[in-house]
Image (cartoon, rainbow, N blue to C red):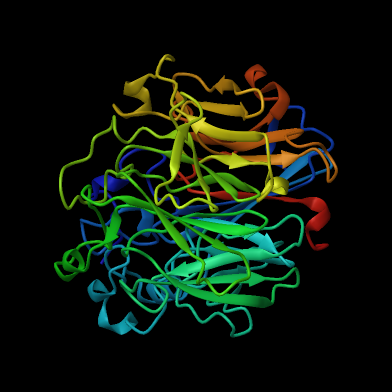
Length: 487
């Protein structure tokens, strides 16, 4: 059977179509002047279907992990992209067809692959202890060579010490201790209410493991760490066993359920875990979190309801107004008896995918960035190919002054998730560059744009041009050159 993606509407549009290529480009074209102190590598990943899905009700999050690497050095940028050689990828490549079924529903897989890992390694990347990991939260990490992107281990279990069947796509690195903190939900199997929490020391060895339970089984996509505590947000994106029995995807939104903020001590046995209750909300990504004595603060982009239109609803339907996320601070005082958390909207901007200066993860901080939808700016919907909201602006937040500044990309372009690259190891917080991918709809090309973080409103100081259009990605990770192994 020949390969044909045209029958599935999920792949309509320049930046929705599968890329499917692996390539190397030496010395990419650059417009403007690359900063001489921008040294390191920007890794990012996109879900990129190797073969058309087996079922029409599949979702974009089920694509195979396709990793891009932009390496900056001496005023030049080299590019490399590779698929992660997951067990899923290798089986489907060998068969020349899709063998895995709908999103996280193993009962819809071809029987020949039921015993293989279904992980796609398509959501995020992180570099720790000299190892680069591609991540998908339903499976253990996939280890890649940070220089070549060669897959070194398609099922990495931290020397056999990872007892959970799953591992988060959003581990956090403590900048003080060098530890990586991670967790796995549905840790003992599909639809289980078990969560395993881990700490890996700066050599990458697991030094702490703790098991807890969640109030109900659903998506725990991201989480937060402070110097003393860990926080989880349980949202009404529930794991629907009944839906999966009917051939559907893993999740459905249940608007009748509350959200829960769970807080526990780092390094303990989990018995101090407290769940604080709130109304139906959707928040999947953490900007940062910190502690001040018994006060815990968690900053997230939060919406009134489901932000993923392609996931089904147990009740109701997708509402684009209720899906608008705004930076929101959740807080609790662990010395009080209250069973609810406080919720304060920090800014008016509507957006998703917040990031920060990762040297301040878990610490009191001031700097944050996020792609936002500035509806006061024009969008050429005919050429962009959408009638929905377009991420057309990157915004910098200054929490101390409660101020924001922005760069608008223009009416025929859109933006993906930005990253922060510090000017140097000892640069002050937020002193450096905002980098990320930009979709150019007229040129049908992807650009990597670099802005001075202190003067974002002035626009790019350099634009790195790819000669093709990459698929819309999810997350990325900047790794400074001084931490990378020598090639």
